[in-house]
Length: 261
Image (cartoon, rainbow, N blue to C red; front, side):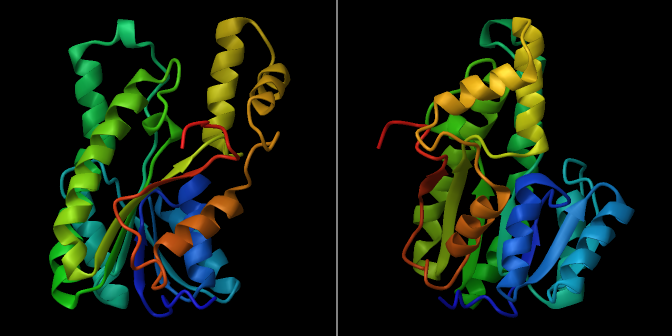
């Protein structure tokens, strides 16, 4: 299938590793001009160089998207390199594991600052141009915790649910302008983030990483963790031309982990 995104400018937030990198890799493979973002210039450029070596078109941009002006500077760099942003992938590091009963007001504010404000700033920077050109793709990398809140991840559950509510509302407002807004919710994908969560669970329960992972795999109908490339492929499709009638959706990529429809 031709995804119809060759030559489109794709800005992928937090894309030097994990699911952001998987998404950026899939978009580059489909011919998009990809902007890799990360806090370290050398790492961002190294990732971009790897994509170029594989035949893709990419640049690396050093930016902290949680800082004031960070999202705007990333969009400016993308526009100067490739032209107006057609595809924006919202992504970022997750907050620390935490129990809901132990949260403070400052904790809640920090989750909003990390998981909502930077993403809103990116959307605000690219949305007017997308609407004017009558083509745009906004995709957020979320969490299965949006569909079924995860134990001991209260901050993540709260922040990501707030972002999902904003994006679902936005999707209906911009659909007539050819802009789609979706979320892709990973389950247990084999990334450093998931390993860190499993390590924290092992420490908390006095167990081992291997035992925690075996227990986790047993809860997944597919009986395995997902490959980042599988997630990237799903993300690339949601950013594609053929996906133009899919909007306001939270699609799960979780091997059947969440049992609800």
